[in-house]
Amino acid sequence: MKYTQLDPAACEFYEIAALDDLPNGERLFVEIGEHFLVIFNIAGAFYAIEDNCSHEDEPLGEGELQGYEIVCPWHGARFDVRSGKALTLPAVEDIPAYPVQVRDAQIWVGLPKDDEKDQETRPQA
Image 1 (spheres, rainbow, N blue to C red):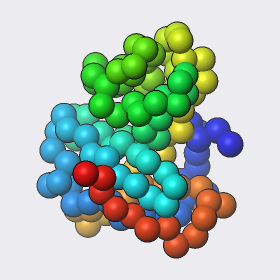
Image 2 (cartoon, rainbow, N blue to C red):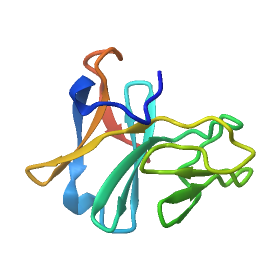
Image 3 (tube, rainbow, N blue to C red):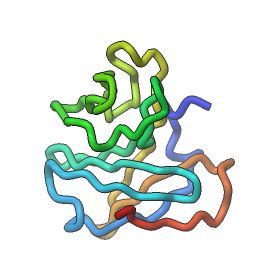
């Protein structure tokens, strides 16, 4: 399934954190069921991607953030955190990107409804 154009109406949303827990320019690592995500606050807008480079199946979230691009710390592939689109080699496949909503000063992330129900959400250390 391609997540880059995931319709929020087709998602189950999970409460992640308070807005104050993710200041501008920062990122937050979370686990929802079997999904390992990175959520970014870029100029007050929130974006969530899978914490996994499509090139070599390595963690992506610790990479350098340049504007809306995350640079894989392993091989330098770049992805747009707004869409999950692979922008440079060696990555050729997009990564999952998930819709983010803010409700009552809380950050919520949507996963496809067909994913496993009742998933536990927890921050990663």
